[in-house]
Image (cartoon, rainbow, N blue to C red; front, side, top):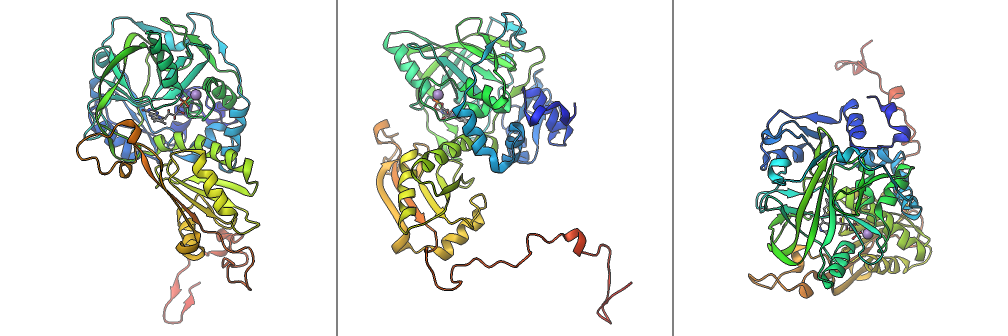
Length: 482
Ligand SMILES: Cc1cc2nc3c(=O)[nH]c(=O)nc-3n(C[C@H](O)[C@H](O)[C@H](O)COP(=O)(O)O)c2cc1C
Ligand SMILES: [Mn+2]
């Protein structure tokens, strides 16, 4: 398949995108039979951000595993068919203009070509164990789809899922939409039907991370990103609709009033979540394509960070621009695990404004721990430039904002000090300080005190024209030999 197969750079399904990566040298085929425990993740991690990894017969399993196919910002822009500079605007446009999905005829969905009702997950699927202290194999790239028991509207999120029995899995649901649906069902003593979709296309994965109000079906945002309604299929055991072109679907139920130990698990901040009792999914059916592909995300690596950070950046940008039209761009830095550190590019017109921007950003998402506001001449995607702005435009006594004792990320280990051996109760988890740095220069300044040094023509120089290839110097005469 050639690159022409991707209309407008779009990836209609996983296979099309993988073929596109392969055709452009971005898919590394790994030797057969790599162990599913640690080795597979170790290899994928080493290739992270440079090539996707394709594992044939992992651990002797018939189903191949793929990892790292959206591990660069540029690749995600390419899948969306936009320039990198337009990535956030394009995502935001899709989130604001969702396209209702289109249901395919029963029996015609590729994701249901093969059906298993006798469930042994370890035998059916090649589920890797990733980090050193993980409590066994985890599904890390599963789109969890459920319906609101009250309204029937669907929700999509990615949740880590520990597979600890033939047909039993424990899931981490942070307090967002899936947990709200589950709580509503549990209050009626009812199970909640869920589907765990593995092997979705890049844009559907990205759409799952959109930050929307409840009762916005993220599959409709996936449709908007694709530029066409997403084909979906009804599950065989429930009313849940799943992307018809997905590779693998696990159909199951979240049980009311059941909790089982889950964790430890190496999470995106590159630390472990402790073992706690979590909600349980019992599996009723597994369906898949013939010759399916299994996707695993190596936790805390670029695929994980980018899938979360790009939709968040789009939301943060929209949120800040509503109050501050001078906000031009935002970036959640990789060093800040794509969640905690926000860099804001801002056209300042009055002194003091950057501090308002900082406070607005703290309010926009509890995960935001540090905000650095910089001027228009600083590229927020280049951490070296941001540090330069802090080094030369910031004074801590004047430009620092600290808010103590606010809610932060429960996965930031520095928030949970002082509890000894005990895991603190949920109402005490994630409390920490917020830090804002105004690294903008004064609106008015003398001469060129705050003018960034620039050499006229530096960006326009064409080195192909200027550098003489293969030239050698006669060091006696200090002349170029001819
Ligand atoms: C690879 C990956 C793993 C994630 N794991 C979890 C998880 O275990 N639990 C969780 O609550 N959110 C997890 N998230 C974040 C949610 O999927 C994300 O916040 C989503 O947008 C929530 O959807 P909602 O707003 O519709 O509830 C993960 C995200 C990614 C990209
Ligand atoms: Mn949602």
